[in-house]
Length: 505
Ligand SMILES: Cc1cc2nc3c(=O)[nH]c(=O)nc-3n(C[C@H](O)[C@H](O)[C@H](O)COP(=O)(O)OP(=O)(O)OC[C@H]3O[C@@H](n4cnc5c(N)ncnc54)[C@H](O)[C@@H]3O)c2cc1C
Image (cartoon, rainbow, N blue to C red):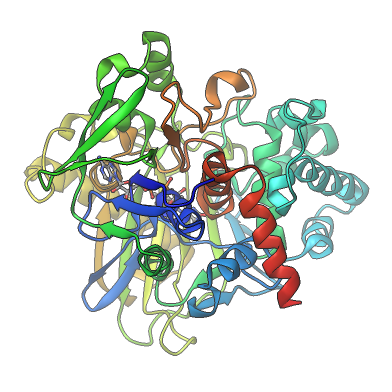
């Protein structure tokens, strides 16, 4: 169906590049317009003080043999070029609660995951089994999660699928402390009490229970590999060339203007940017007021405050797992509720793979932050935000370092360089609403409101990326399949991925 179609994709992040790569394999001539001079969006890395840092893709899953990402990347021919290391199977995550100073170690794999909690809460062993079994059952309701050809069964989900995740957990688990602990991956999907659906909790948890891994050398390698697929198949990826205006005639896009002064015409257009950013550049008459208002009003996930550290040589041990810190047990669902005194109530820190694997070269600390905190500097530019902003940023960086010193006495002495990024960085880099790191949040209270379709009223415009379905490495590549198949035909890409896997044996 797609043969020789010209496809223009706005946004060269995970969503735009995966969708482009799939379509380029279907003989489409793909052009990607990327705003930044370096492609990748959340996959983008940057270099500072001689070290490479990731901006937004730290924890991977699905890349081991048989995993969905492994299958997709093998089909695209990029799997062998990716350098990925699995985290410690016996402890993929550690959770430390300052309230009582206790650290829990969580092991990889379904049975081990259950045992990690059951050994601490023996009375809940059977409940834990039932809870984890149910999470796996919920994921079975999503064919795409297992790369199964999709049936016509939308909206035929079990009742629990759309329960709020916190209600889902406490349905199985009686111990309140354990309920909080089981929500520890909340920062990975911006979980909100009473709103985040159980299926989001289940998909993310099961995805990572099966495997947690990291890129060796940073996530840029995936962006570059996907761009290579597009180029090898005759397409182009144009970095530093934002789409500046989308011209609409009648019920379809006529062309897209870009910063290079050209008008790009295509048979099909895909917006792989935040829908609100798309609204900013598309002719107002493209969509009716109700759709525009809805896109602007759907709540977004939180933003973040990231602290990047370069260690003095051989001073801080490499940690082959993700470390979650939380002040109190009952704060799992309220990371976004804080004041100047209580921030940060929790954060996640990781040491990316290092040169010798024994000592860490760098660390990234990721704390939840609301855009409101930096609203007054919204219209300032990077490097010229003013002394008050620099002071504010330093103060927050110090708060993070104070906590790290509590967690690892002597931490400050290991630091050679430290710098931070605030929600303004995410606003500027990704052009995402209010610097939201995961885009639209899903709401179990009103799922049809918060769920947007890949199809739009314009017959030649499709959407892709983290705002459409699930975010992250777990969700965005799957949505890329949906978007590509909206153009080339249902299950066309899925079947080819599965055929490729079958041939690999
Ligand atoms: C701090 C942080 C930590 C994260 N940690 C993880 C993690 O550990 N694991 C995980 O799986 N996920 C993680 N994520 C989420 C993950 O990075 C995102 O879900 C994913 O990268 C989103 O991909 P996307 O293509 O939808 O959007 P993006 O990556 O934001 O891509 C959109 C692209 O569009 C470009 N763009 C915007 N406007 C225009 C325009 N007008 N013209 C042209 N281009 C434009 C942007 O520059 C950007 O490159 C994290 C995100 C952040 C920010």
